[in-house]
Length: 96
Image 1 (cartoon, helix red, strand yellow):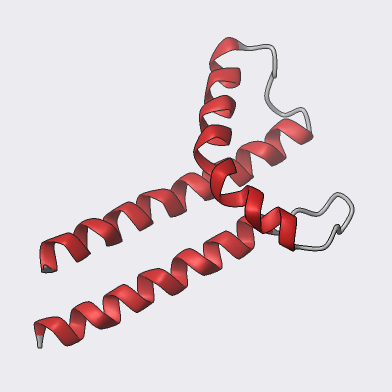
Image 2 (cartoon, one colour):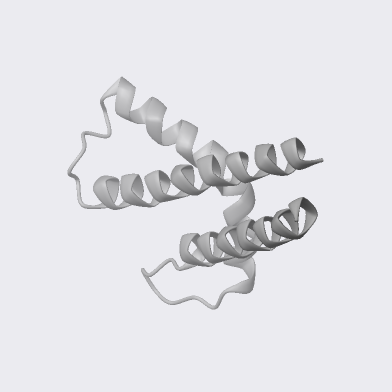
């Protein structure tokens, strides 16, 4: 059971970094820091979008429209941190 919980924690950590990378990439894309016509940049952006959009879409539906400010990655990260702490605390109780 402990190895499954550790695997889930590792997956949550990796997904946390993917969400952060997606948010940073969206800022770079919005401010024209990266060339959107570059095939590699387009592939990275498409991959990050496909990995994060299924989790961000329901959050965006619930959050109010704040104009150009998208807080859905922040809400998703807070949720991931909460789940990670919940699992880590239960894992600590399981081990001791």
